[in-house]
Structure formats: structure tokens, C-alpha cells
Length: 389
Image (cartoon, rainbow, N blue to C red; front, side, top):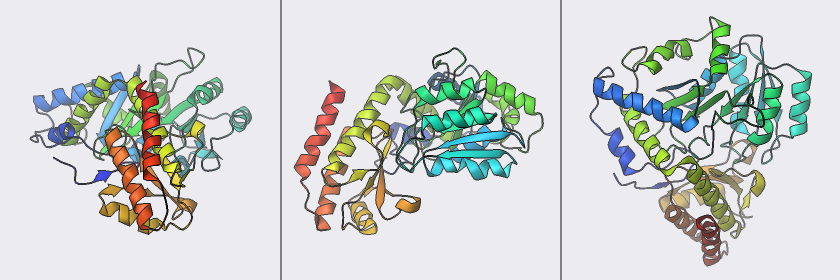
């Protein structure tokens, strides 16, 4: 299947033919041994990607469901959760936690910046939290978190580390076996969705628990959840021939194929590629007078949020760009109408992004802005050359 448009929103992301082919495979019963083998392999590949000593869960749903599963299975009513937020999607943990009677505090960064580590340290010293959430990269701001600093602080306080990897997993390293300065300083939970850097259409909630997180679930006993209760899913994840709720058969086919692609490239190489793509896109678009919200040292490799040059109307820009087959996203909250977001992750290629840079320049010219497209393309290629070398 040939994509008719170049989808450069921060998710969903472009889907390649091998994944489309897997998605369009003949639908089989969810207890069919042929499907069960595919599901088993998908789960094994998920464990290989995240390197957990615990269990992974792949269920029908979105990243929001994975967020809920992470919270409701580890933090009980009346217990305390700290949210480290770098934007809109970090903030979403607040209403989610409150829905389950969890006491929640939040440290909110100014959009485009990271939360001050001193404030994190102070908060952890003042209050004993059951868990702390980190958004690895926030889809609204394009800010990446500093795990090297945050994970040790959180673990030393005795709290669980819950990492929201929705717009980072399969692009950035989320190795749950990695020790951050001490053998006990490890990420306890990684949650994500299928439609970002993994490169599958939306529809799967994916979450990994290490042994510490699984023990936290056991200690809670009965929880206010049914579909989200990992105890109901554990038997199926250990033996996919068993039944709790019907799995999305064709999505599992696609996910299994996507993970094969991810693991063949290798996470180290994928991270280098994504870093290069992010820098190249931002460097090129800066020549058009577009300003990234996040400074380069805190910018996410998977997406960028950029403000418009003076005089450029958001709707006109994105509409004209869409007529050329390039789809980008508007900004959120107080940035709506003032900026746009562009994804550069998953199955995107250098040629796709170079084409987008050129088309963006031509749309700006249509809207009366004088820009140098050749300069932008040269900047793009210069950054990629650094990656190749």
C-alpha cells in the first residue's frame, strides 16, 4: 500500500508496506495456534526491546489506557503520586490519578523547559511518594527528560519510577535493566502506545512492569479496575492461548512485524538516527524564521514544536501544506495558533523529511514570507552528514 500523504504529526506516524501487509493478513481466531505463536513472539520482542525482568502487557487500547494501567496497579487510594510534567501529556496524569482517589502533586515546567532538578529533590525530601511519573518526551512541547538525573533521585527516595514512553519508545533507550548509578536505580514501569516511534497504526496499549512493580501490584490486593487490572492479563501474557478479552488480532500481526524492524535496526542506531533527524529538521526550519520551543539541549529527537514567523497564520499554513500532501499538527493549549508540531520518528526517512522542509519553504513563500529554501536544505544535509560520519 502506497501512502497518499506524508503524515508528520507527532503520532500516528508513517506506516511502511511490511507493516501494512502484516496488518492485512487473514484474520484468525484469537485461540488459533498460528495467531498464538505470533502473539508470543510479539511479547518476547517487547521484552527484548525494554529488557525487563518482569512482565509485558500488550492490549487493545491507547497510550492513555497504558497510563491508567501504570497508576491503578501500583498506587492505591489515599497514597501519593508525584508527576514531573514537561507539558500537556504530563499534566494528564493529574485527573487520571484523582479519578482513583490517589493524592497527586505535580511539578510543572515552563513549556519548552525541563523541571528544575532542585525542585524535584526538595519535593521528594518533603513527602514520601509511592510513585513518580516521568514523561520521557512530551508530545505537546517536544521536551525530553533527563533520566540520568531523575531516575537516581526518585529511586533513592523509595518511590517507583513510572516512565511514559509514548513518544519515545523504540526511538530512545528505555532499558529497564540499566542501573542509573546504583544497582537498585532502575526504571520500574515503561508505558507506551503503538502509533508513535514503533510505527504501527493506533490501537495498542503497551506496558512493562519489572519485578518491583509487580510486587507493588500484589501488595495492593483488590484495585478499582477490571480491564486495567494486570492480574486479569497476566495469565494471557504468560500463555496467549488463554482468554480474558479478545486481543486485536491484526494489530498484533502488525506490531510483531514492527518490532522485528525496530530490533533489526537496533535501538542504539535508532536513537542516533532520531537525534540526527530532530536536529536536522530544527536546523533547517530555523532558517525560515521558525523558532523551536525547546532549546536544543532539551529537545526531543522524535518531534519538534516550532513557532511561526511573524505574519504567518496557523490554519492557512497547515491547510496549504496539507494540499501538498504534508500533514503536520497544530500546537496545544496556550500555543494553539502560534506554533505547529512536526514528527520525525519511527518509519520516517531522511528523504521524507527533506521533502517536507522544501514544501514548508514553498508554502511560506506562497503566504508572502521570503525564505531561502536552498539554505534550509543545506542545513538539513549538514546535520545528517554529522550523523552519517
